[in-house]
Image (cartoon, rainbow, N blue to C red; front, side, top):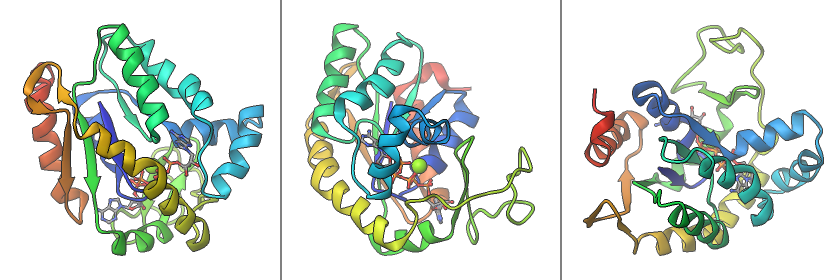
Length: 225
Ligand code: AP5
Ligand code: MG
């Protein structure tokens, strides 16, 4: 399963709920890149500038880092957050999954008004090692400035500022939206009467979560508890 949506649309927040409720492992492309930055790998050195400038990493690197990790999980369930993000990444992923006879079950596209997203991003605090996100008004940590699980300090992401955010939105419109439109024409292989992609709209994750849960339960009956 894929979760798509513009920067700050709530992909990470809703993926965490999916992981908790359904026990599906999440692969988060941004978190993988931030791990490389924290560990000062060659990929991390490249990613630091790319992320700071609101640009995208090359498709081939992202396919190696994220796509191949998902493909290696065979027919186990998984959810990708932040990959694919370009038509090139989508082509590589769909082709590899097709060859392995494990096509996608569901693609969710979060539609949240852009007007409310910048404020969310400015209020976001992140526990970088785990990728857990908080928001000062919507989802504050139990103790100010500290991660609920580890007690470690929360940080601002380097790309959570108005200038970089504008560049991230621009690259979403230029590179990711055309990919989303292409995926919109795909059918679900397991039930060709349904489209592969489902749009979920709403201003709050609390409004979107019941719809997301229902979509997963409908497409993946084996996950219903
Ligand atoms: P990534 O880390 O994936 O960033 P993103 O796509 O910009 O998305 P975000 O993580 O900022 O937002 P989100 O949708 O997860 O929202 P969240 O749940 O945190 O990627 C970072 C960078 O890495 C990219 O810009 C690129 O450079 C590079 N990269 C990554 N993948 C790549 C790829 N495949 N190819 C090339 N380059 C790649 O929510 C946001 C905030 O809102 C939080 O504070 C949250 O608490 C709050 N919030 C959530 N829901 C609600 C709500 N309902 N009401 C109020 N507040 C809410
Ligand atoms: Mg995220």
